[in-house]
Amino acid sequence: MTEKLVEPELASLHRTKIPGHESTGARLGLLVLSEDTQKLLGSSSSLVLIIRELASDPRASGTPQIARMSDLDLDAIRDFAVELAKHAGRMITSARAEQRSTANAAEKKNSVDLVTEVDQAVERYVTDTIRQKYPNHRFIGEETYSASGETASVLDNSPTWIVDPIDGTTNFIHGFPFVAISIGFAVNQRPTVGVVYNPFLDWMYTGILGRGSFLNGDRLPLQQPVQPIGQLGNCVVAVEWGSEREESGNLRVKSDTYWNLARLNGGMVHSIRSLGSAALNLCQVATGAIDLYVEGGMWEWDICAGWVILIEAGGIMTTANPAEQVAEPGLCDRMILACRGSTSLEDQHNVIREYWAQSAGRLSYPTR
Image 1 (tube, rainbow, N blue to C red):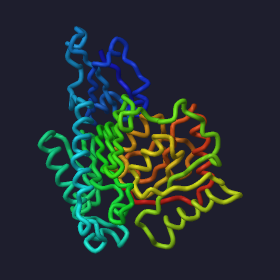
Image 2: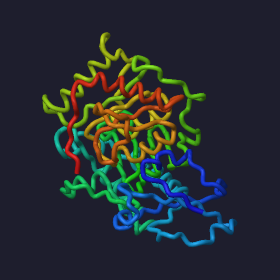
Image 3: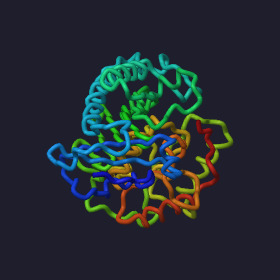
Image 4: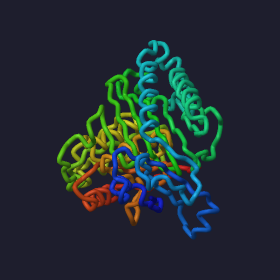
């Protein structure tokens, strides 16, 4: 009836089958144990109890031994997020010219960190609609959080919607059509459902942990069979500059690293791309069009939805800074290196280590 998985194994849930419960009609529930229960069980990590219940299966009639915090219909959550994204997309594409202008955009941290009234209107719509549908779920939105003056992390183990109403606000203002609404859903601080929609290009990316990811209904990655990456020199790498523009520190590390990636005696990558949207960068890695995407300074609303879509397309997520092991970062760690799917984990790890070898220093961002 049940199978217990420690948290690191959840990323490979789509490769895990529970004997007797392989039916496509199964419902997936994520049960998060309290900290006290974790201590009683002697685990140093959160445990996640995966339950598949079949209404027609008599084995599903029993009561779980551990009380549920949530019993989530992830398909319904995904479908609801898709409808939210479509409506929000219409709000974005119908915005008047003056609503998109630099003159009417407000600065947050500085003159390259902008917010428009359309960002705020979309987030209000999404927030209100989610709270009506799922009043017991938590919500984290970029504009709400930024306006609150909060500096501490507000993400916990609760089922939480994590939303960026317009990812790519600068693109939106300038008419560059790489703009998306990013709607993520996390449980136990792990990205679980993701919807990213570019309304200008009508690209709808969706993903559910353990169920695969798709672009307009086509399974990702788009290129089949998947090809090996081989080496860093074969790669197209996505990068971003971010809003931190002091001439030392992270900006210097980024610019010197990008130079290393491009130069003849460095990484000599095929090319470097900058789409101006973390969510769309991740989705392009998921499709296989981009091989690596490195970013520092982003927030959970920038990457939660795209994270699911990437992982479910066979990609992996690790840290942007060189490390001894290729390990998955936390959702709020603020530094990522995303790698597309390949023919083997060894191939992915090798190209990640090649990227790390070209790093010109260590990025440093305060975590909350």
